[in-house]
Amino acid sequence: MTPFIAIVLALASLSTGSMQGPTKTTKIRDANTFDRYVRRLPEANRIVIRAMGSTKSCFKAEGAATPDEKSCVFVPSTLSSLEVSGKEAKQLWRRWRGLRMGNGAGCFAPGYFLDFFAGEELLLSAHVCFHCCNVEIPNSGIWSICGNKEAFERFQALVSGYLPHPEAEREQ
Image 1: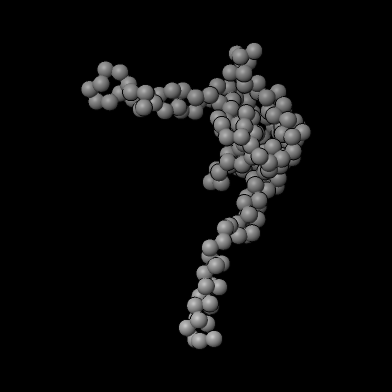
Image 2 (image 1 turned 30 degrees about the horizontal axis):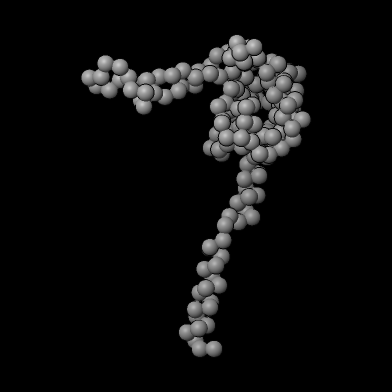
């Protein structure tokens, strides 16, 4: 083998590693992120549950008589809220920790915001969409929480039992 061919083969073998998809380390880090914020969240003794809606806000262009629909945004708004503590907080915290990763849908219109506290320390603020079975964890993105259907349904029933969503009540 000539030195030129040996160098080309050595360079080719080095570059194939960078052409591969995500490494196993990336997948483990992602699973650890979910575990840290869901399965291993430290005990919360107080949880604030907020039922969320949105308000449409539109802006008029300078000199325009009416707002342009393209300028409209939907701003989250709290419709109602409830703080649970003691046994209720512990039960909700346990149900939260029982959630497992799975495959959610794609709507992500969170109906609930949950703030988990240990004393005065905010442990986690999560946005939950029960329609698509997803949760948004700050600085971590959106995660599916449907890996265990029974655990998801128990969690959903507890949250909506503590604080029924006002918009869902209107639809009935």
